[in-house]
Length: 187
Ligand code: IMP
Ligand code: MG
Image (cartoon, rainbow, N blue to C red; front, side, top):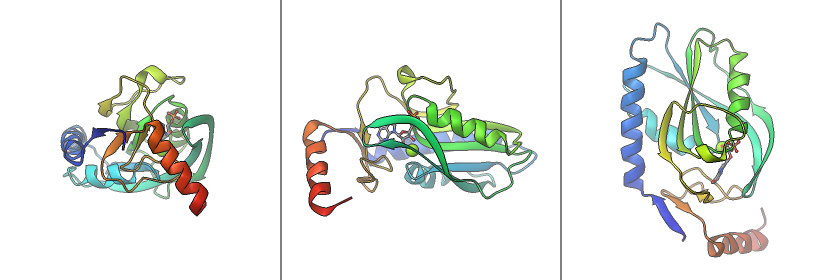
């Protein structure tokens, strides 16, 4: 396995810190805020993060597609919309990683059509230097300094490895192993 970037323990520390910050920042909201997880990559992060949010919240999920393998297509499609009425509420988008910002820019402008009070963004990873679209990440778990492709804890390579409990930066050998696995077992 390539270099481990975040261990399970590191991830739990980040979730605790961000959960406390969100609790503090949202404790005086008039209406109950809605945490919107972006399927499927944010599921692991969402589950661990919300354990540390100690005010009442609603949870919902949205699904988009834009990625194939290790390259972003920049072509974002809505696969599943939120099912909760977010009008007048603070919406917190929970995402695994904000890279070019294309997915997040789409998500923000889409969620704005639901007329929320405001939209906040919380991402486990941020790749500020890769931005094409100017989006702000209000709550950041880990700021990346180089352009490694990350896998594990929700982050996938052709849908594989989301179940790995830590996050690692892939090397050539990892990609080869996963490609071999796919060619033997199918997608
Ligand atoms: P963006 O639209 O370029 O900001 O890409 C955001 C989406 O691409 C995220 O929601 C991830 O699903 C995926 N993504 C970006 N970088 C990585 C990575 O290093 N590993 C796995 N998925 C990634
Ligand atoms: Mg994603």
